[in-house]
Image 1 (cartoon, helix red, strand yellow):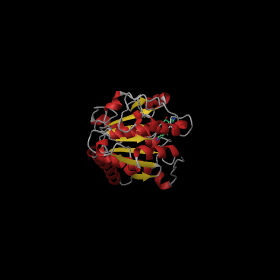
Image 2 (tube, protein in one colour):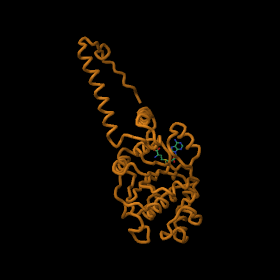
Image 3 (cartoon, helix red, strand yellow):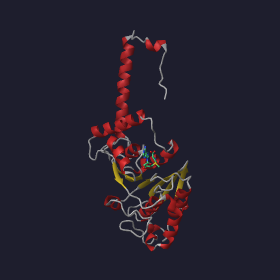
Length: 284
Ligand SMILES: C[S@@+](CC[C@H](N)C(=O)[O-])C[C@H]1O[C@@H](n2cnc3c(N)ncnc32)[C@H](O)[C@@H]1O
């Protein structure tokens, strides 16, 4: 990006000939900054003792918020989702945070998702252990688990046939932990993932753009199971990115269901899925 070199001669030769004008400007600036800080402290955006720092004090949390701002203000790499797509999840988080937020994939958006859920629990699931190390080196307070997927994108069609023939994949069974027979079930997650009631899930990984990549089949199926098994009141919000791709679309229609689709912006779909007690034995 080009730097803006201001060559305005008036700008360069500004001299405070009237000291009271300078005082006014300085006091105005101090007042403005104080007001902004008060607003941040009182608003939900302010990260009181956020997921970054556990029970960190206000000062530490404010510092962490500022570090996130500094990161995005100076980074050349920005999240892949567009402003419109991010706004959909942002709006939901504004109404439900602090909440339990599970995010498939570590990326350039991770600091942002984490800071959108102040005082909540945001956990990232990432397929690539080296990438986990790289990201956590710069943002050690993010919580991330490495996941070894059992699928490949090239198996997407065959895995749908497997779903229809394997009894342990059926919606009546609906279980992930210890589900070794259903290859769509993420059976390798930590107990923390199984024992948490997730309020919101973002599926923007694993990679699904080449044949040997894990694909998002198991992530989508498992998100649907977690939503069905929810004991807390209310729906689970599930977001799926890259729905312009065949596999994402096919699996979303099979397990997340058109009838639960509440918003579509760009390449992002937002589902609100009720617990299974409120619906029939089928996924859709
Ligand atoms: C499909 S991308 C989505 C990225 C995310 N939405 C973002 O804005 O950064 C998700 C996966 O790509 C991989 N990935 C993303 N950025 C990467 C990078 N800079 N280097 C290596 N792998 C990366 C990780 O495995 C991650 O789980």
